[in-house]
Amino acid sequence: MAGLADRMREARERTGLSARALDKKADITPGHTTAIESGGRANPAAETLRKLAAALGVSIDWLMTGESPTAADQTGPQPRVANDDAEAKPANGTEG
Image 1: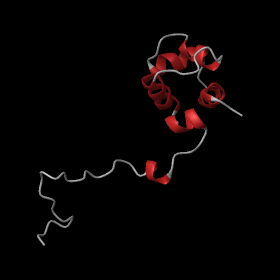
Image 2: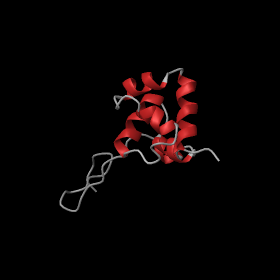
Image 3: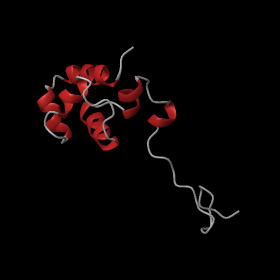
């Protein structure tokens, strides 16, 4: 079963980046990619994972689990929901 280290190496090699180049592109501490890929850092910080996923062009979910994001995750930003303090208006702008 592939883990974070294997998926990260796979994505990095697919992009053609060296470990050092990925560190730089993701703006993380030099040597961090190598440490994660070798298993020395099994639980990197969430911010590090966010930066790595962005630099590799993959989702954090895929990086962590190997699973593709759900369709809901791919639809983009969700519309804001009116809170109880604000008056909600219909989407077409009419009262009603």
